[in-house]
Amino acid sequence: MRDRDGAAHRWGGEWADGAWTARLWAPDARDVALVHGDQTRPMMRQDDGFWSATITARPGDRYLFRVDGRDMPDPASRLQNGDVHAHSVVPGPSDFPWQTRWAGRDWAEAAIYELHVGTFTPDGTLAAAAEKLAGLADLGVTAVELMPVGQWPGDRGWGYDGVLPFALHPAYGRPDDLRRFVDRAHSLGLMVILDLVMNHFGPDGAWIHHAAPRFFDESRHTPWGAAIDFAQPEVREFWIQCAEYWLTEYRLDGLRLDAVHQITGPGADDFLRLFANRIHQADPSRAIHLIVEDERNDPDLREQGFDSAWNDDFHHAVHCLLTGESDGYYASFADDPFGDLCLALQNGHVEEGQARPARDTPRGRSCAHLPPTAFVNATQTHDQVGNRAQGERLLSLADPDGVRVAFALLLTAPFVPMIFMGEERGATSPFLFFVDFQGDLGEAVRHGRAREFAGIASMGSRVPDPLSPETFARSKLVWQDDQATRTWRDLTRRALMFRAQHVVPLLKSGRRAPASVVRHGAASLSAEWPFHGGALNLWLSLGQVAPDLKAPQDAAFRVDRVGLDPFAISVTARSR
Image (cartoon, rainbow, N blue to C red; front, top):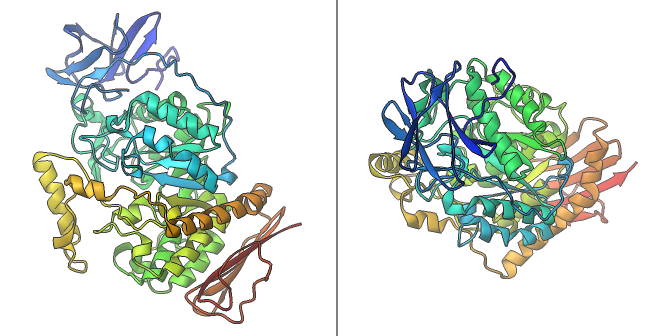
């Protein structure tokens, strides 16, 4: 949002000429003051509903806004002096001594590793996570995707209940800990992507409701609360400035935007187009990538500046095929999951507007014209593991040989692969749902979680208590080093080496023609993806011995024997 002189109004504070100016959008407030230390200073209202006050301050000073008599933290706080209800902290100019010169990486090179900072290591901090990055780079991972780190109430949580989206969650460390994490990642050739939630605020500590009720459209609701009103220019600027802050202040390489299908209503489409345009200009010296989670299976955003979208269709087809499950959102993939996998390998998405079993309303439009890099595929994610009552990983639910071959397929197919933390080492520890709410809100979450699963395989009475520290502790990765984990790491390394040497050059050359996928019997297929630089060929069995499926004996990558073993994969690449 810009005033008549073209000067951008900034959410939060800003330094200029040794003075610090605090700003807050509170368009319907009668009186707003800045509480700085033991001083209270009236703030001046501007025509657009922003209030401002310029003071002599020092980095580290504490402040609050007093809005119509109620004290509240800054909704754009960069750092809190405690929890989400505490004082905000005046930030100082960044003088972090960056060590790595970094121009980013081509999106075709992406092999993503999704991690939750709090459970990735025993310590659950960014400093501890940074110590594990060299091991990921050694396996061939090229990007880490952090689940949300904007501050939420308490210490434990997935991050999707954030209420101060500019502020680093303090349980993970200080701002310089994130900078050191990113600097270390870049020194190893790893991109860092942040999961950003712009579709809702959490239920505790969202003081923006008090300051600016107009931030929300109370006539619409998301599954998590009041919908945000993206028709308001000030609202658009809040989120764009938030994204710019993370990308520039911490030198991140991109963002994954949570549930953009809930960014709806007047102005939403224009906002997303504006967002992509502004974010790609945030730092012209390097590549910045944008991923969306979008249940609509619509190509529009990927045609308008967004690089890629999470592709749950691939996951659902693999999951139903290997587990036989058919509850909930798996219902429409349970009829012929291997046929759906063939569609996913050929077109990217499975549901593209056609009639589907167990679905009253068709979903999606054709996205087959998009490049393979427009789809982020996974066989496990925080959602698909953590939203199970017991948080089971795929290895705990399906034939290990099938899981191993599906994982190899994920890493060698031409779509962007995403590994969920621990998957690369064959982890079987659960990833459960956990929060750190208090009082009535905590009880409501506890009982709601139990009710959610009460009718599914009698699991309601056995759902782990999401408020218990034990539930959080059980979700931490176990970093044992034994033959089983070494075997999985070797598979990951071999597959990602094949990807780097053969798949990435083909992706960079550009797609020459549509993919061709041929089904052979119940659970085998052959596939070819033509590129200007050559072709990628793949032969796969996921539960069927297919003697007539002939794969080259000298395939550059393979797991077991196609045509002889029920679970097997062979992949070759040839240059033109």
